[in-house]
Image (cartoon, rainbow, N blue to C red; front, side, top):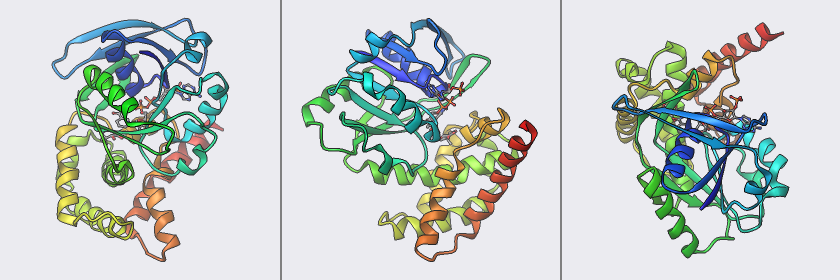
Length: 299
Ligand code: NAP
Ligand code: PAF
């Protein structure tokens, strides 16, 4: 399959490496044009694998059968609008991102559009990607331009490269459950400046945030008890114990985080329905304060 990966950070490099290793014709698409990208991945057994892949070739982009977008949520619309005119009508566009809130703005995409929710955990430091957890990736559709046969074929290719990949009939529900976990793990790790695994000692905070989220999710039509959500969250924390959450990485790297689309999404929904979400607002304000300090230092 001819593939372009838009957004070559931790997750994009993982997909690029494994898809290329499995015989696909892969290129990366970078913000700043370069001829190629050197990808280095250290896996959970501390083994390093490397590959050099081409980047930013327009012909490759326009002939791609698959475009995987692994950008931070706040960059997706801008970056896609810049290249959409080069993408052929049959190219499947797969967006893998955390957070919710841009979905209504994706109508400019006329190609078959899929959303991925992934439980892989990776972070990038000094051009090396540390792949800390090999998790499940669920994929589902948010528009109707795609037939069953196309995605069976796609799931097979993705699953051969970076397993496990499964088709998900209700990707929105999956995304909301992942959002709930991110609402707990991402701000708490950023506030305590710790790896995911260290959160297990903050039982009370985890419980209170999950209780609030369970209520909101139920209001959204997703029935998940507080106890169940605590279990799911603690499983993610244990599985990704050596990872630095993406929010902590962003703040450490002086970047805006995805908080507006994580706890911010919950707060917006709650406001609209006259529900007060004390825990989420508290976390949101602390992270916003950290972002504000970064931006003030920049000026
Ligand atoms: P990341 O390491 O920050 O990667 C994003 C990449 O996109 C960066 O290399 C960034 O370059 C690049 N970029 C930004 N604007 C661009 C543009 N206009 N054109 C091309 N490239 C551009 O983030 P990530 O960890 O891979 O995560 C990607 C998404 O997946 C996020 O929504 C994240 O929450 C989600 N996710 C990540 C993981 C994980 O384990 N990493 C797991 C589950 C979900 P610069 O750095 O130069 O700006
Ligand atoms: O955003 C992240 O970092 C990841 O989604 C997760 C699961 C919290 C692991 O670090």
